[in-house]
Length: 166
Image (cartoon, rainbow, N blue to C red):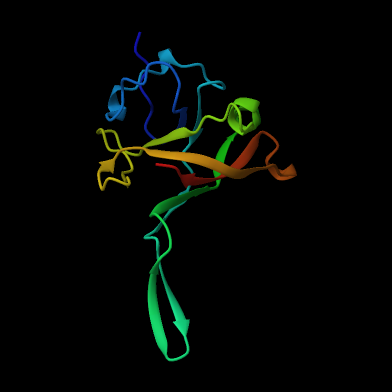
């Protein structure tokens, strides 16, 4: 059986997980080849997200002169807001990102972020270091939060901050 990724979800898939034959075509992802909570996690798409990009260029003002300085590589920060999910799924997401395989320097594994936001094979695209447009983002998760409120006892909101890692 083939289980494809669903419209309206974020998927964080380990970059070293088995069956990476879908690269560079996320439409070929078969979730049956992965274990949820170990090799990937999914979160429903929020009400909005912010896809921030940095060109790696900054301007330095010294006296009466301005200098363009290329200080590093281009990168993305991706922050979804208001990821509403069940409390159980929020706990699974936290467990996934906080496991030793994702936090220990000797075993660290980064992720591919894949987002399908339309019924046709439409994925959020990102530009990699080789100037290719990719339908995924190779990234790390820098931090996150789970927000629960008394007024909505059965749901939790998840915030995750990512940084590209091409």
